[in-house]
Length: 48
Image (tube, rainbow, N blue to C red; front, top):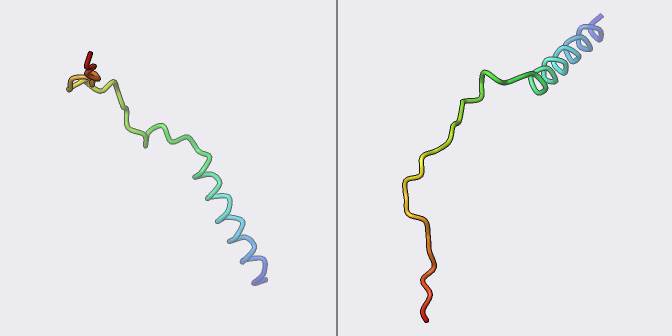
């Protein structure tokens, strides 16, 4: 009987892990919008 309980515990552990990995995580991901541009772009100076 102890083997059956251990097998059940292992199965539950693995299924909960798979559910956590492959479940939708939309609410945990923060919304990221367009970041404002705050600097001058680099321009290479040419000497001619």
